[in-house]
Amino acid sequence: MEKENSILTNITLQTFASEGDAALIDQRWEKEGPGFLKRLFAAGLVSYEKGQIWNKDSKLMRFVIFKYRSPEALNKCLPIWREVEKHIFQNATIKVTAYRGITSEYWAAS
Image 1 (cartoon, rainbow, N blue to C red):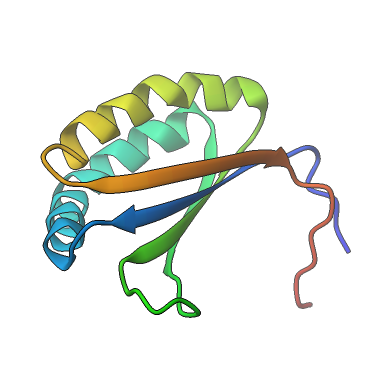
Image 2: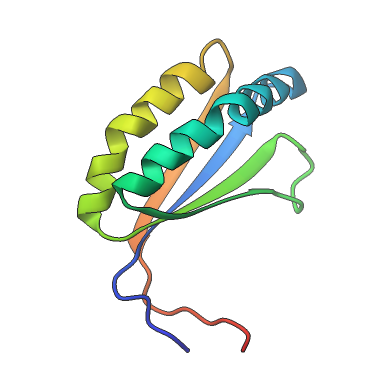
């Protein structure tokens, strides 16, 4: 077991209204995401992970896990995330639910 020294973790659930909305966002993220991630990493984002939720009937649900160095790093990233929402999510119907917390325990295979 390792402690991650108060890494701030954000788990976001994304639910799309249609496959078209999901495809549109994927297309935009593929094009613009690397530029946003470069800025986010410089501001204190430690990692970004996106995945498909399998245990639901809908294929329109995803999870995204973000880890930040500190609460201050998250605050530096928030204006960039607002830009992401404005550019990437524009004209798409998506419900986003975010949960934030501090990592208290972390296990990794040796």
